[in-house]
Image (cartoon, rainbow, N blue to C red; front, top):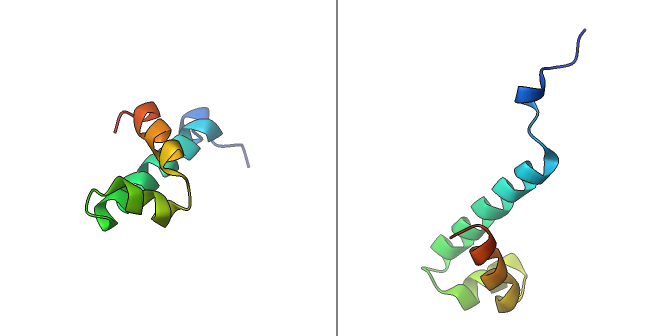
Length: 58
């Protein structure tokens, strides 16, 4: 059996970025936009959340 084409296997960093972004958006929704609560849900500091929001243009 041949390996799948590269287009079906995105780079790991891209996959992690997508998962991070989805988790952040989900936490923000659960916290009704409250960034402090979203950071608590994610188990990260508010500073880390702010950095990731900036990184992912959220």
